[in-house]
Length: 358
Ligand SMILES: [Zn+2]
Figure 1 (cartoon, rainbow, N blue to C red):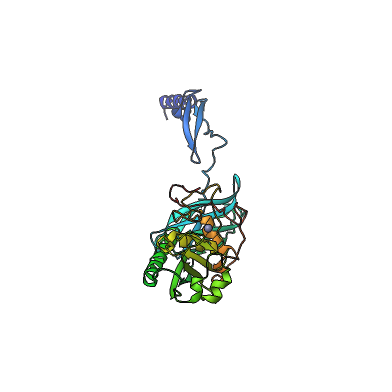
Figure 2 (cartoon, rainbow, N blue to C red; figure 1 turned 45 degrees about the vertical axis):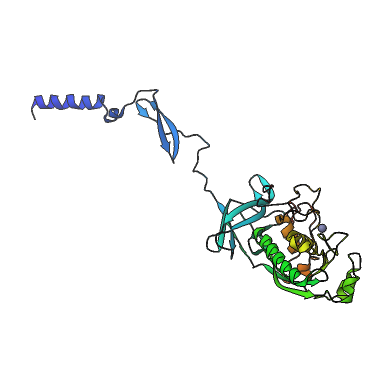
């Protein structure tokens, strides 16, 4: 090695010492830059020609994993809507009878709801659907993703016997059949979960008592002197009821109904009196109802709330239960307001005439 080359190496070594390799990544001191750490946007600062680590705000962690709970309702009519009322506890607190509407695909409807952490109130889901009985099902929510699966049963089918005491029998028979069709259609549209199955129309015009029984006669007079089919709704069609040919009455909560001889051409009257037989009460003056509800005392339309549908099925004194049509299902005595287990009588999941869901 020559002296020249030794000098050259010494210069080179000095140069390397003066110019550390990492100075190539220089930034200007005090400069700020954007950066990301664990998916969070942050800021880094240049100190001594070096970028420091990325500083991220304390609230920025991993984005929260969204946990959904699922309410699945099975064996519903394809393409129709299912409505559910559900209770529980979520982050803001407990809630009672929150509602959700879902469309049925094949025979299943699925409602995804934000995570419900624990049961509350009735600890249940209540499902309503076309041509299906309303069903109350336990909901054991936890903080994990849960599915509550509610199986629905077909309509409750009940039978009606008409006893014709007045008018032209053939005409009354035709009108009775038409009234049954209209009432069944209303039950379907209103998702009432009931359906008139078998209809019998009896000619009682020639029975002597048909000329003497009036709407103020005792109920037993009709049953013993005209006839009575136990386990069915019995409708006696006589000249007038309480003075008019177009009105009706039900002997409070019994399966015995009287109709004026022209009332069968106004099917809502039949639906109203059957409503009484299923323990529904008059809705006039109650909040959340108007004249379009079928239980308004002067009847015009056919609407039923989901609260009313629930009561028809669940009340132990409803003739549906007296007939033993829900022998394995639970019963509940519900008044007008919402309680832990009862939806309010005026609760509606779908529009009824001019009244929207509430
Ligand atoms: Zn009434």
